[in-house]
Amino acid sequence: MEELNEIELILIDNLTIKYPSLKSHIPHLKVAERKHNKDNLIVNLIYSDFSGDFDDINALFSNGENIEIKGLKEGLSYVIDVSNGEITSIEFNTYNEKWDGKFGDYEIVKPE
Image (cartoon, rainbow, N blue to C red; front, side):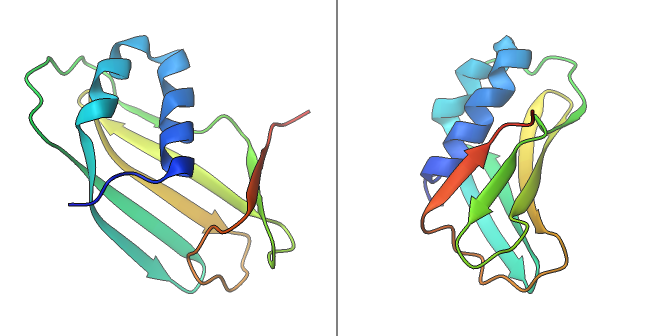
């Protein structure tokens, strides 16, 4: 199990603005695996030492931000999957560009 990286934490924190009950989940989230192919990255999450409740939340969440990364013309989109109150994954996708799955320097750009 790995810790979530900075961008993953930022995006999940943004999720908790819409779903405040998920805020208590953040300290218990770990990365089970990161699966990368040529144009996307799926971060599968698991819980560690969580004794709280799972609310009845089912959502695919994105604030519509674009994640700008050096080397990608169009950047990345993302979606966070919440199933039965459990934050299960974050999926990052390019817009049909090859990507090495590394974030390096990035900027989260909010929609206008």
